[in-house]
Length: 276
Image 1 (tube, rainbow, N blue to C red):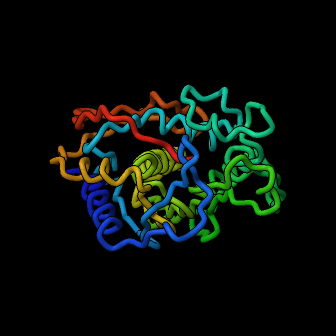
Image 2: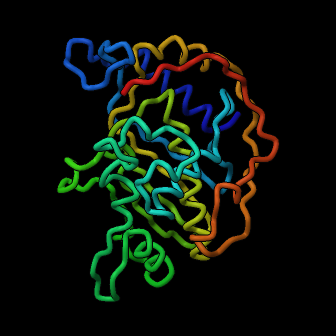
């Protein structure tokens, strides 16, 4: 089975069987009908994905991996916060002041330039520079969680930092996430940051290594429990093979640079309610 499936099943069973409910607390998220959206959670899940062995996409249900990659390119390549530049409408609920942007969140933070001894770089270009010129550095990282700008963000960043580490000829990374809706976002985030690591590796003459995903608050919403139980009882298919175009310029990648071969997945026709 796909490792992504195996870890998802393990994580969700652990959360459902051993997690802590927040039903006695006031919570921010609400369902469309205004009812508080409560969760059962586990603190600090850590999952490791070896990208040299397989691309970590689930087969328990279909993951629209190209849409996930489009979103990560929107943040790290386009450095945009304009939701009209996305083909999906995932971020429409988080726009600010009746406009088309999510404020000073995600891509905006990647666009801000900072001064270094070598010159001015935004966060992405600094990573690309260091991977090529200073791969032994233990300071190669990006972060979108800027406390100074939080009050001007439509949503405080969930997946907020990537720390890169070159070991031999392999590029590894740690994705830190403060909050994770396991059903709607878990494998979406895993796929897009695995793709980001692959793109940075190719742009730097390195091989993709491990993606370590650290989730501080891994939760399942109350109205998602039955759906999750149904999904994790399915029999996973083998992991598909990811083919990536041979591109060495990070800014030339597109979502169509990635193609999954023999991607078999279980259909899921039900509607998943979303808490906002």
